[in-house]
Structures are given as C-alpha cells and as structure tokens.
Image: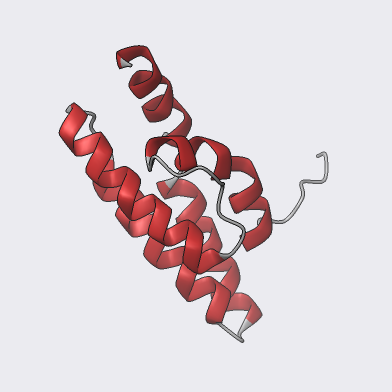
Length: 102
C-alpha cells in the first residue's frame, strides 16, 4: 500500500485557498486557519446566493479546521483534520460551478 501524506492544516489551506478566496471574493488567499475559516464562511454566503449545495459541509469544515489548529492533542487533531478534509471534499466542484455562473 503506498504511503500517503498526513493531512495538515497547512495542506488543506494550500489545496483550497485559491478557490475559496475566489468564492469569498477576496483578493488574497488565506494563509492561516482563522483567515481560511473566515473566507470559507464568506464563500458559504456566495454559494448560498448562487443556489449551490454543500454549504453545511463547508461550515463544518471551517469549525473543524480551527479546532484542529488549536488542538494540542495529536490524535484529536488528526480526527478533526480528517473531518475538515471530508467537509472540503466537494469545494472544488462548488467553485467550478460558481465559475461557470460568472
């Protein structure tokens, strides 16, 4: 079985920051967990206005990501990051749908 890279706060932000910044109508992608969570919440409003489904998962992902960033327990952090990643799983599709609308 091939080794997989562990999920980190930084890896989730790096993977999704540009798209979420676009959806949040921000000029710069977020670099911290708090800023990324804020942009996720702004993006949720954009998606809701556009009628794009999946916003509850993004709200949950924002919460899990911030909680993971502040956790000092590695086991808890791993669980929270896995949940955040699951909540962000369709973010790319949501942003693609939004891009097709504008």
